Image (cartoon, rainbow, N blue to C red; front, side, top):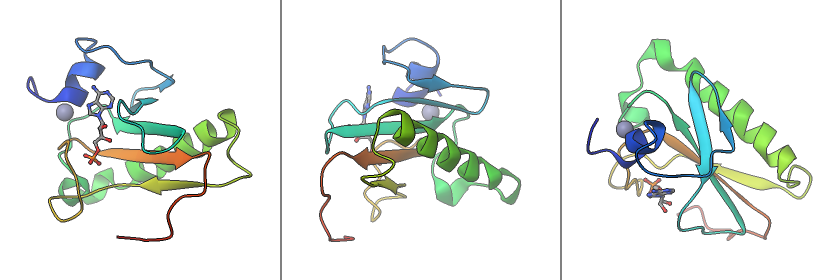
Length: 114
Ligand code: AMP
Ligand code: ZN
């Protein structure tokens, strides 16, 4: 998708500090961090949101969690704790319509769920 910011990062047209990359996902820091550690785990395929995920694609989300857990260990927050978030659609607060997971940590996050 030519006008998608995450597709452009994947294509190397917009710079990002890549922390992880494989055939399925890439990870880089959020440009507007909401916590001292705020990374994004992004599918390489342009899937608009969780609501657009086919049944066959469901294991991709498990892979995103695996990579998020790995990054949490690398960032030293596996023991202190962290939060994984996938905003979905308008009411879910999704701004970039390309499937991604937020990894947030390194401070006590707010108790509110929404
Ligand atoms: P969401 O609200 O779940 O769609 O989150 C989208 C996230 O993408 C926001 O936290 C933005 O700060 C982040 N973001 C947007 N553009 C970029 C970019 N070029 N590089 C890194 N993060 C970005
Ligand atoms: Zn995209």
